[in-house]
Length: 294
Length: 310
Image (tube, rainbow over all chains, first blue to last red; front, top):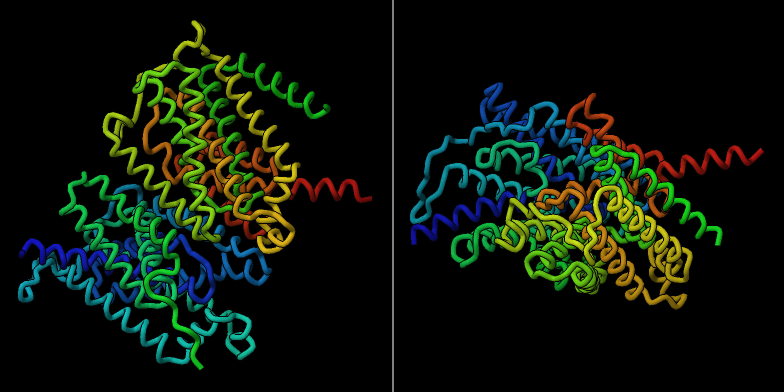
């Protein structure tokens, strides 16, 4: 039973990481319809930011994290300015920005491998490597920290989308770009903000997961795949969907590894099979977008 | 008739080249031809039929592993193994195509990306069938009726494969089917209204090009005489996409230019910048998408137009 509960905490923590990656996709996909495969590389940049700020300069954790998030906010903003906006304004086909971002993915990854080499770099956890027990639940400090941060991010995102005017304008753009523009919503600002926020969320996922896996220039793609699997499971329509999808994915993955009689290598295929099944059977995800309200 | 003569001439010239190359150059030449073959069929799938699929390189791998398993684990004779391998590629391509092509736009990209990753997982866990992470090695092409195709003659086989692929896709592009594919790419609803069976066109385009990639993979299996999972990873699937886009998607000549350029670039650049040629690929890709959406072949067209204009 303790073993089971420990697994639950671990799975919830990795589910939260996937959920953050999924949220990062969602922030861009929802208003713009663009799937940004570079989300994983943004997380990787965040992890290396963690290495530089927390390991090399040994900043206090909270300050380091704030610096990373702000820096990545600008990276996201710059990516949109550089690789997406010229295409959207020219009226290029919908595929073009996605391909440009795919190119940016390679650029980010190779720049990091150029700057930091191919070896994994350590990133410290928030509160050391200790264990924490809350009632019957036990896990590493980092696991509880990940869960806490993710829940706050999702609460903030939910509040933003549901309760603030700026958030409602995102929703309006998602429902009908043209109508939103006619109602005086600044589409450019929504796009900039979507990319910047997405990069900041992705970086957060990277910093949080880095103590467990180390910062490595190839860490992006697996995270990108897990993130969009979570997104597809939960549905692109609602913020809560990303969280739900991430948790379902992580539990399916870890319980298969632990309890199913298949070799651990094959269990790595679980998220991929889940992704294919969901795409074929339920491409809108578990949670549907709410209907437009008057 | 004129184009037939052109193909025969190209076959003679490209084959003749094979007989003057040293062993390292032969290796480069063979792989270059295979990349062109793959880029041509991927160009049909991505550029002409408009399907963003990341599974093309996976079918290349399926072909390579299939022929080896049929030959050496099931002990089939070569001609039979080739026939069975082709049949297997076609069947698998159809099995994937029928559900996958129902997916709209980016969902197809996601599903095929997952399929590509799943293939690597299966290869790594395939035990003695796929040789797990070490892959398959220590084999050679068996004899057919007492003759073993080696050295430059095997290169000739690859030349014929490449030209056969080009000829088939060329004919297809100019046929009713090619125009249907372009129509479906540009506007499925309009195509439907014009009497094109959208679903069937998509399935055939996907299955046909994927099976062609599988056949190219069968030929590849005896180029390095070893296959292992990393060869068929996502890196190469991305590279294939970059080749088609940089060259100019939707154009056969573009696919050839892109494949030649991006395949040879690392060989030229690695003395200068080591293993960071991928950075150059990425920059190339972004620049082309931003400033030259019709690819390098589009630059060529613009030049030709300017020369003929006055």
